Length: 172
Ligand code: AMP
Image (tube, rainbow, N blue to C red; front, side, top):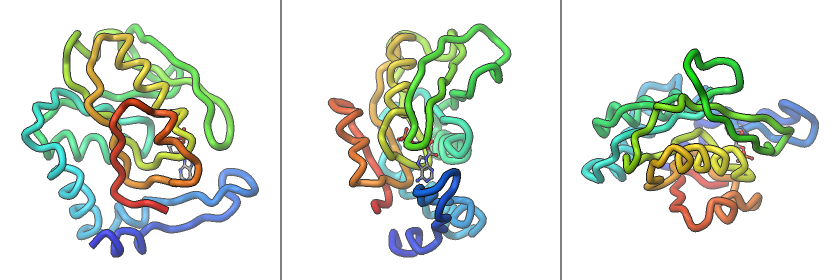
């Protein structure tokens, strides 16, 4: 089944810049069976683990994170690019495989001690997820795991997130 999901991901060479092979999950998400399987597989891992909140990282992480939160009966929190969230925020900077940016979270999005799962479409360098881990911890949340649909294994993002738990459904 994972092989079917793997085949449903489209490679886009040289996007968003030369030398990057962009792993496009929109082709997986538009297939009803693949989308459902992806959410069910991830959900199966977290059902019953008393997770309070799933954090979705803008933008594809919103799709993965909100479906997963619904599946496991958790709330969903959005981590967004700067200037998009309407309330008071905390922010963290990070480096991408192809650039630099920062992310924001509402300062009251997580209560101290809440168990949090971080979700995104893809793990590359781990810089993005690391920034989100920092945001969660600044607010007093406990990171249970970082969950990704895709992991680019050779880039070593998993090491950057150490000692936090990392799970990925599909590896390239
Ligand atoms: P990183 O911070 O390097 O782990 O990059 C992960 C973030 O950047 C995720 O939010 C991905 O959506 C995006 N990303 C980085 N590299 C790729 C890639 N090769 N294909 C698709 N998305 C990517």
